[in-house]
Amino acid sequence: MKTEITTEASEVVDQRSQAPASLWATLVATFFGVGRLKPGPGTWGSAAAVLIWLALSRWIPSAWQPAVLAGLAALAIALGIPAATRVARASRAKDPQFVVIDEVAGQWITLLFAGVAWKTVLAGFILFRGFDIVKPPPVRQLERLPEGTGIVVDDVAAGIYALAVLQVLIHFGLLTR
Image (cartoon, rainbow, N blue to C red; front, side, top):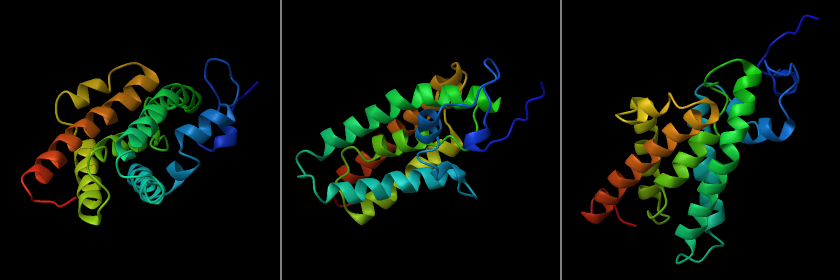
């Protein structure tokens, strides 16, 4: 039996089981299809995370926002690792570009204590994308972790770097909350 491997969600085949990746894993890993957008699916994943946070934050009291965002980031990590593992296996790629749940988690970590203002959100977006692309040590080394863990955890680390720099900028008054 010959099996064709493609990156379409309904046609992704797991190399171990020769079965399509589950719908839940594909939806989570691609962040409901955002990872299919071109060019730069990672940037689209980050932008979607920012837009969702901007929309949600309007209905969440500011005192609760860091806790809610931390919960969303934790959920993205907890669901993202197994989903990314399944989709990576099915696509036979170590880190498929269309898996963007890692960017979502990292972007939400970046914005944790930033407050919701256009300057801080834009700076957080730019900082996260920069750290995600450059991958300073030990971010690049975290990619070597197995399967979904390596896919997600390197972006979590990039998010932590971006969070730290963003907080320094806010602390020294270079950005207002």
